[in-house]
Amino acid sequence: MPNDDYARGLIPINRNINYAHYYRASTGADIFLGGTLILNASGLVGNSSAATIGVENLIGVAIGFSGPQKRGLATEDPYLDASDLTTLAAGLETGDRFVLVADDPDQEFFVQEDTGGTALALADVGAAIAIVYRSTDSGNVTSGWSRSEIDASGVVTTTAAQLQILRLHDNINNDGTDNAVGDYAKWVVKILHHQRGGAANAAPIV
Image 1: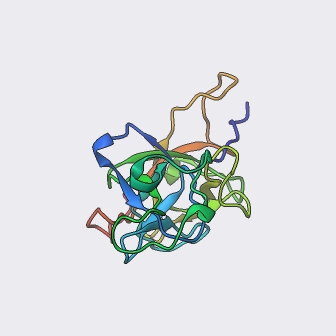
Image 2 (image 1 turned 90 degrees about the horizontal axis):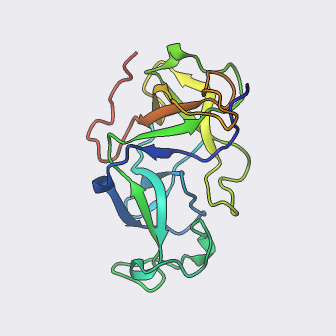
Image 3 (image 1 turned 180 degrees about the vertical axis):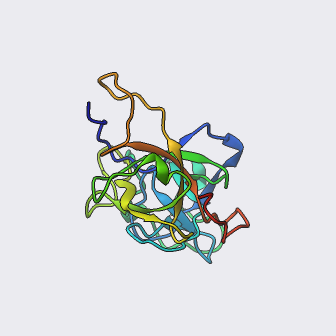
């Protein structure tokens, strides 16, 4: 039977809560659960560049949000709405919004494969792979989840991609069948070039 189809970005598995930290959000685009993030030169987090094959150092993945002084968001949105963000300055500001980031360099995530190109195979384990958005929208404003997936046509034999494929995820589909190689397969990955990892040029294990 076909694999379940749901694009939700990267979802942490076996998460180490000691490596989830709040970062102030950068102004600009909306941030969604499961979205990959970068830490900029001002110490603020924002979205990474999806649909790009190339080295990109990431800080982690968005797993939650908070408002001023971490007291909760001003609205009930399940994502961080860019319209809620004010100009950020040094120090704690009343308009600050925070993103809870799974930022352990060794954190594993599962993520859905897209349907473009040739489907990934077990032989691709260890390879580097790029992220792509499912549609022109980076996230679902109703559910709050990112629309990012891994790009089946974005496997490279170098280190020039954001993620590394670790294994096929042992997920069960809604119809009771096992997650299998093919369209919408769920794969376990880790960030290949991590901003806290100290190994920006780490090579895939292939």
